[in-house]
Length: 379
Ligand code: GMT
Image 1: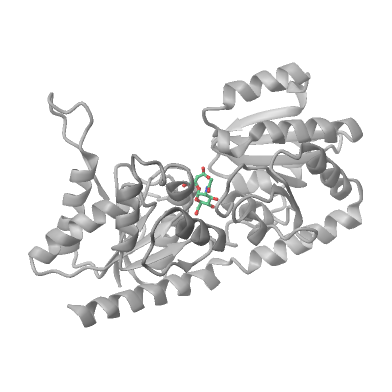
Image 2 (image 1 turned 120 degrees about the vertical axis):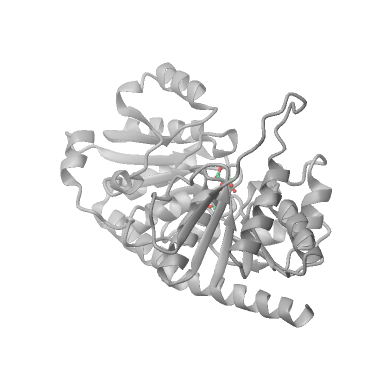
């Protein structure tokens, strides 16, 4: 197939999923065309069957805001026609699904029928999507996509609750590439981070409020009262300053490392003993899946789709949002007994295996095929 992928090129989950999906499809022989404003973080300069089309916006004194949507729609039209694409897969409803609809209408007027698949990732529905500033457009573009997928059952249900949806939504979970994420032997690394054999707790996110990173720190503070431990905070974002202040206030700076954005996050996860993700809302939790693939048990909130990934009492524990005491108690339970830890670690790894990219990729391929056939039947 000739597949167009539109996504945000950032470190965020939706961009990562879109990029990894495109790369995996290209390895199976599909031609994949990425369209976005910057080369996606995980897309290396040359890959067979992968093409990158940068969307450039136009500087003009009249424009206070650059008309990215118009430039993206024009790019979609151009690439669909000249690369003879079979399908457009847009990740994140805002603005990609609406822009794709516009491109589809332009292409139709030129005699080219192209189906659109929209993947909902979470905040496009739960945080920003249902704001009145966007909701009519989000609802319309979900209903007029030829195929819609959501990354968890919870997100699917939340979409039906938040909008008047007349389209079917298929759940296709996030996936993981075990060639990259696995139990790497990084003992020398572990020695550098925790020279006294301290337990290593980790958290990865974009440090937005919704991630509740302060709960990670408070949980860590309580764990530290019972055992020697280190905390790795991977990523960066708007809450970073507040979090640094909190570490200072608690006198824990010596034990908490802010590592910033990391491209080889798998190497840090490989030496971690526990992953904490206490989000207020989380449609799936790709960061937790990455940890589980490295055999790291997870302490999470029970928000959103997290319980579909983190099986309570098996791969870790899920607790109510904000229940720092509970999170600390469960963390200590897992960390203090090597046998318990290894039971959770094995279960986390085994459950992560069900999200192996080799299991999930065919679901996207057959979904594309179905959507293409339906469109051909209508055209
Ligand atoms: O988690 C983020 O802040 C990034 C966000 C995004 O939209 O890029 O991630 C969302 O999509 C990921 C991939 O499908 C999911 O694994 C994350 O759970 C989801 N984030 C939220 O729902 C907060």
